[in-house]
Amino acid sequence: MSETGATPNLEGGDLTIAIVVARFNENVAKRLLKGAQDALAKHGVEDTDVYWVPGSLDLPVTALALAEKGAHDAIVCLGAVIRGETFNFEVVAMQAAQGLMQVQLDTGVPIAFGVLTTEDEDQALARSGLKNNKGADAAEAAIEMANLLREIQG
Image 1 (cartoon, rainbow, N blue to C red):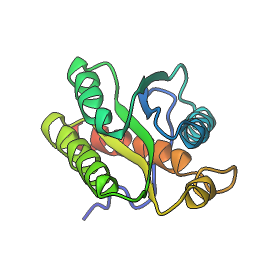
Image 2: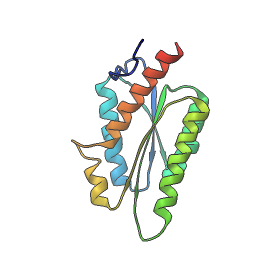
Image 3: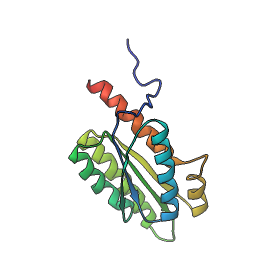
Image 4: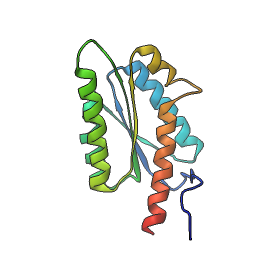
């Protein structure tokens, strides 16, 4: 019996990965992007394409367009949805997550979810810093999933 994926394959030298970044809460988004780019470079991914969109609800349609184009092995989606005084937080967070999940299920292209959903800006900043950066985590998940799917699909 074989066991595939028990040890993450983070070799990205032959992968092409796009990053889509939601501009809303831009100060956090830039930190997530830096973390993702640093992680991709660390694992050998070169010349990453970066696409900025207005907000997290714009991530799924952009990821879909990129996935359908077929030029990328995986797509990293980054953003920050910070709770406010209205129900908008729940709507944006849930719809962005559901939309991105649907894109990867429909296209077979891995979509790494690097969208922070936090109670306040302090929590978002704590998850987008130098040592704890969810953008870096999403980038590594994208590499791992692209390699795993390549192995499965032959």
